[in-house]
Image (cartoon, rainbow, N blue to C red; front, side):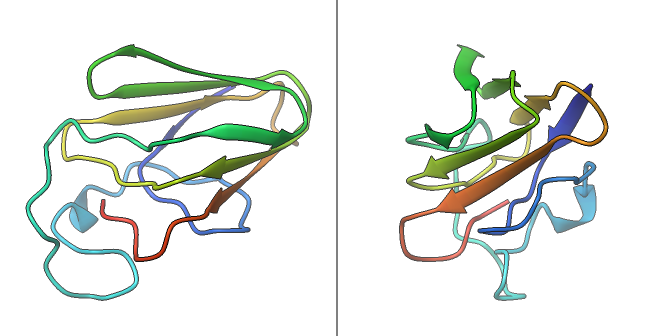
Length: 109
């Protein structure tokens, strides 16, 4: 199962679709985001529990291939640029990925 991810909340299961209307907002602030590279992707992903592989096959693209039904991924930051893509490939519809953002500040989408 493939899922496009453009937003993440720490400690929440990821089940999000493309939210193009949020491209100009900083998550959690409701205000305009600071300028960021259109290809910015999440940084510093480390699998803390479960089995998953994190790859960046091209500029502006991150792919998380999850092998276990449950996984926890810690990220230093989870910013997603306007044309960047983050994919979570999960074993089935009942799979869950918990994404924890460990750096301070809001994610910019």
